[in-house]
Image (cartoon, rainbow, N blue to C red; front, side, top):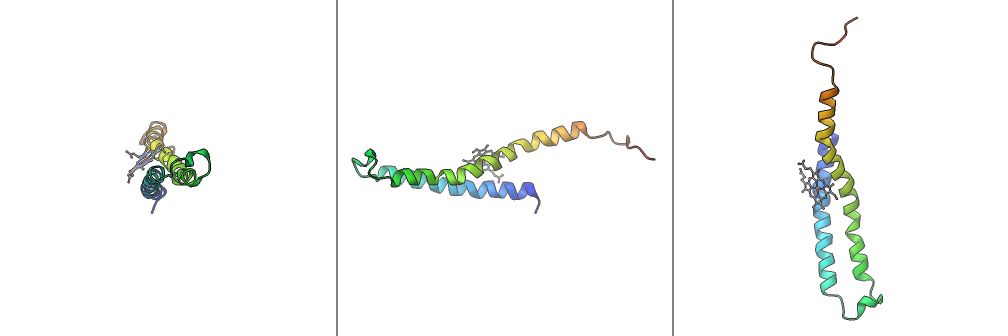
Length: 88
Ligand code: HEM
């Protein structure tokens, strides 16, 4: 398995983990006891932070995937033309 495939696969599975964390976040907000916003109940905040765990690697793997076509184009432009190789 090459790097690009591995990173794309990682991004795909992290997106699922992130989705689950977002749903858990919404559930935590809806089921939060009234009057708990004053800082007594920190569990909703912790669930919110939980969503950041998959989001951070998602950002980096996503930026890698974003850069791929531009790097490929840059390499094509800078590659030596076919037949121009120097033979000693
Ligand atoms: C955090 C910043 C993120 C960036 C910069 C980013 C960027 C990208 C890029 C550039 C691609 C490749 C698109 C292509 O090849 O045409 C991609 C694919 C994808 N992204 Fe993200 N993404 C981010 C977050 C997310 C999130 C939050 C989700 C969903 C919860 C997500 C789900 C996906 C999925 C399912 C794919 C397709 C993967 C595959 O090809 O199998 N991404 N993303």
